[in-house]
Image 1 (tube, rainbow, N blue to C red):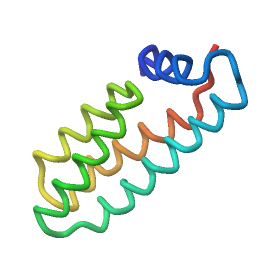
Image 2: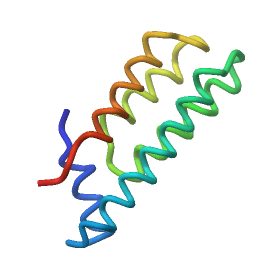
Image 3: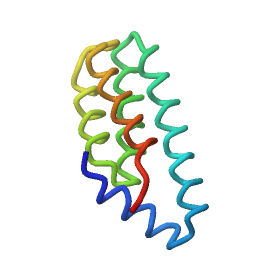
Image 4: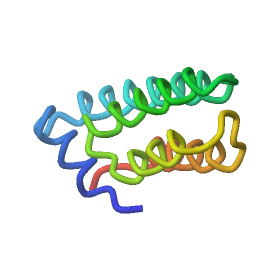
Length: 101
């Protein structure tokens, strides 16, 4: 995964303050996981699309390009699609595990 845009967004917001970067990353991941949980429980088209758009907006605000793309893929798919939910979960886990160098 390319973390350039995500790392740049964190550094732009926090500068070189590693504690603040960690806090922002944690807040992002927590929000993304919350949206993924809502998405995984969505059974109607409206809730599915709304939640995927919210996840896409969150990803866009942090420059998480892959997550944005996957949220876009979700918005075009069927509610409850286990493949896209799994991909989103993996992308969020990768962001959570990644550290800025």
